[in-house]
Length: 586
Image (cartoon, rainbow, N blue to C red; front, top):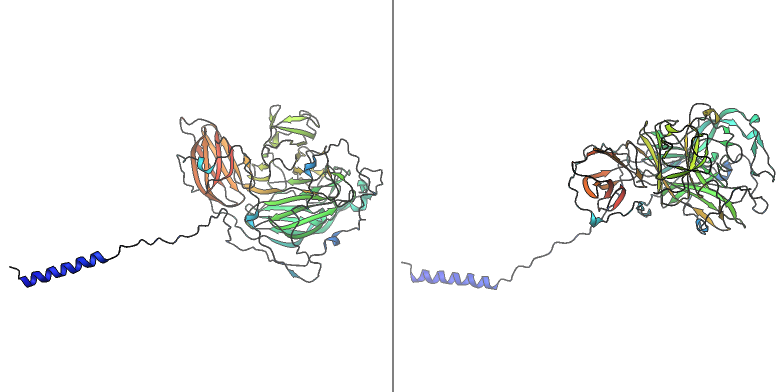
């Protein structure tokens, strides 16, 4: 039996514990601290440093590049060209502001002492948004989950890495015919006045000539600019493949083509102004300066036309995170009168060595072109329309199907891109721009012409033009104080096996062979997200990816039994916004 003393002690302990339990306050939940979230859309890779020193040798004054002194042009005494036929482009194609391509600072120094250039890192986030040019892009919430998610295991490591852009100066030696001694002065009655004619019988033999060269490069591409040869981009290298993408004539030799009756087919990307064909001043030294734009580190080349007194130029920019070069041609009218003009850039291309293969394809989203000139009697004559790409049972997009030289304008490009792809080299280039502008697109291929017309070996090229007017038969007018410019993005692609669609972000290949479908994607800057394949308006497959410039995504998809309908292909960012798309997409 338990004693009364022990029982009283146990009751006392129980009472104390009960009282303590009633007096304790309830526990309060303490929330975890929140953390701000940063969304990074395009990561910048910095896995290697630039291989080039930023310490530059002093560059001479731009005006000292001229080999002969030219008189200052005066718009009041220089006669205007006789232009037949002539149409006036819409007034909206002129601007009253300075071209946005002008650099914000210059690192050119006339001091003979060495200088150290302080390069301004590009601001990638300041790029204008890429327009969505395909119809009815889906919203992020409208994308149902794809039934098949496929892991990507085939992407090789990127062959190149991002690096800050850099500029340096060097020289290039090119055998050059002595054409200046053959110049013939012109008078006011000559339609090319005050520019010279050329007496070909007086042209001297070629001899080595050294040209100043300005190199602008990042981790993906490199461009070399020759101020003394019309400020042209002479070389453009894809570092992922080490290929040169522009024709570089091994000799500077005058031809009998062009508005003046002679032209230097030196190669590269030239600037044609103020008339059609190859312009009037592409052969002589241009001024240059370096600086920066919203698109990165830049080189600007310019010249004052002797006929109109207007200043013409182009700004070439390159940032750290993209493989595209940004090209901005521009013209300013600082004279007291209005002037008709044309402004074109002409890219002379070779993608598989310094020659064009028969397996080269012209990628043009259009259903009709307008013939400019041809030696092929089976196609329409100059000024006539021709269906594209098929005409007379031939697929004219393939260079192998051309039976003679051919030049044509593309009056309506349905998307903001054109391109060229050499399947023999598995190498291509993209020219991307805002849809509907610039006004002019032209292609030319010499085809059966003998290369002896422009060079001393068997090298050859094709041309891709971009212009301020719709054709060589129309002129725009720039009023006093006005200026005008436009912006394009050019970048290389390889290993994708051709493409159907491109913008400044990516190229897409979608080739439906019936049972199997070939898919390819390449990018100009890093894209993290997914590739989505659609069939009959329904998602058929997707692939999570992170793609870098120089990498290529390729896949073969087999259509399941019962899954019918037209295909579509999308490249989406990680937040499901559209980077690029083609085909049928709801």
